[in-house]
Structure formats: C-alpha cells, structure tokens
Length: 65
Image (cartoon, rainbow, N blue to C red; front, side, top):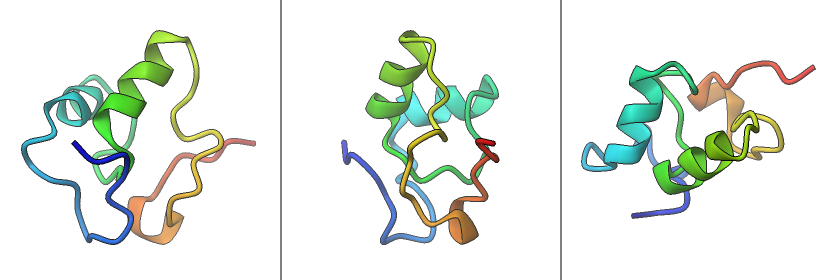
C-alpha cells in the first residue's frame, strides 16, 4: 500500500484500510491519504485530516480549525 495517493485523482480501490475508514466516517470519501496511515492515526485517537499535507482541492479534507 502507498502512504498517500496525492498524485492520483482517487485512491487505489484495493486499499481496504482506507475504504473502511471512509465507510466508518473517519475521513471524507475523497480522502487520498494511505489507509494504513489513516487507521494508525484513528487508533491513536487523532484526526487523520489534521496535519495532512494533501491537496485539499482534490481530497476535500475536513477543516482542522
């Protein structure tokens, strides 16, 4: 799995961790952060969007303010 999909228009469909995180509402359906990173952050009680340097115009990441 990739740490992120920022160069792509959408994440790889076989990233099951990211798919689960999207379905459970931890990240937006358009998230481009790698699933293993997302799940790791969620397990630590952190917001995956916070600190993510992904292209918000593509991923529509949540506001972290």
